[in-house]
Length: 299
Image 1: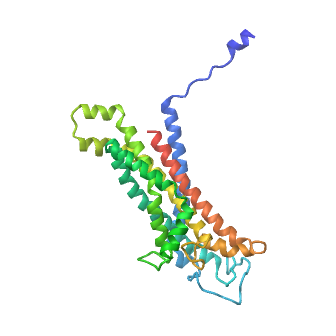
Image 2: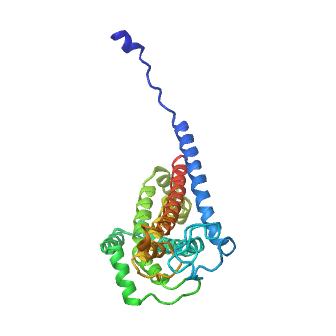
Image 3: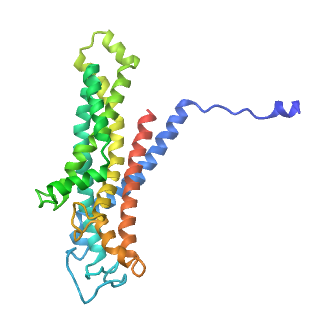
């Protein structure tokens, strides 16, 4: 037994540099796959009028609930509208609302997080307690109350009917995640040795902040933005499914699922197609965010 134990191979520890290279390659793979998925959706949104029948609201009441065919790739809905056309045009709505529903809270929350991270303890405590109050509001109930208060509204600039109240709701609620994330990263980076060395060496405060602290503290915010776009798209589709905000006759994935669920036993693709579109885009965005995270941690 002792001889066997002595001849048993001893595991060789993997060098840190090799682990970093593996993480870098893994991050690149996720970025490529996720980037391709997101790029396909962006191209579909940009080329929607040329790769579809052109009008997502065009009705053909003599050809309702038709199965998939060479003329209608995903069939038609209960009003004879081409499902493929509506699916592609819905990409524009969900990407637009998902992007701006993430960008606005990210900017607002990051600015508040910077104030909390660099401010004194009283300011930091006040901001954190206020964010606790905001987090206590259930998201979907808040949206129901907001849309009920201001109404779906008309289109504004390049936003369609019902989109603006949803963006306002995201701006009022979702900033908390970014403020807490950046505030925590700022306080972590400020405690690192190289930042303390820069301060001890007499480097001006603005150079310490903008040259050393913020560039390293913002990494996780950039990573989370891509994940949050996917979450925002899921939230928008859920609200549309519930009939909140975006009108049900709009070419939007959640609204398409809501209008097609009555025919799920006979025309299941009316629900499956937008559901797969939501899931695939969310996975692509998550892969991009995860890939960026791997590349950052491998440095």
